[in-house]
Amino acid sequence: MSHFITPKIPVSSCQVADTRVTIDGMRDKTYVDKGKLGNGLFARYPIREGEIIYRFSGKTIDFKEAASRGDKECWSLQIDKDTYIDTEAPGCYANHSCEPNAGIKNIVELIALRDIPADAEIRFDYSTTMDEDYYQMNCDCGCQTCRKVVTDFKWLPAATRERYLRQGIVMEFIARQYVVSDSTTRQAMRES
Image (tube, rainbow, N blue to C red; front, side, top):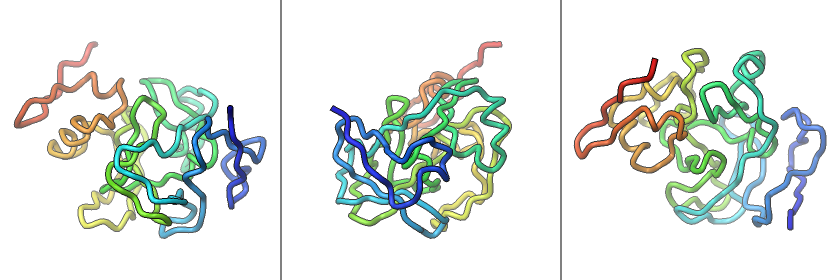
């Protein structure tokens, strides 16, 4: 049975036709509110490490349509080389962090990477979903290890790539290009 919620911020600002958001039977764990980076996704209740926070949904679009969004391209979640989800609210309000407390598994599941207290902003590293050699954005996440620019996964520091691959929070179409060893991450040969 599906449940519907009404976010605090109008869903129309995320280009969705209606103000209801399906949470696929999950209890409402999030809300949208103003944060350091503008509108953000916040934990309504304490969320435990490994817990599914949210399942992204939206219509499937291609690269051309995602790129046409300009600075709103970050609302489109890349799930394959030329396939994106035009994320609906409240998922489109999940901001980036270079030190994320959440990550994406199984293509659409936003999961907690550590315990997240109530009212904390939920953020994932956008680079774990990016492999297009096109989009980048300045980063103002404010964390100690901020990279200052968000870009494709392949441009992350090797240790960061390896950590994300071990955590299983890299989109499958990107992860297939990498081999994880005990001491280093090597990029596998790409098919031409």
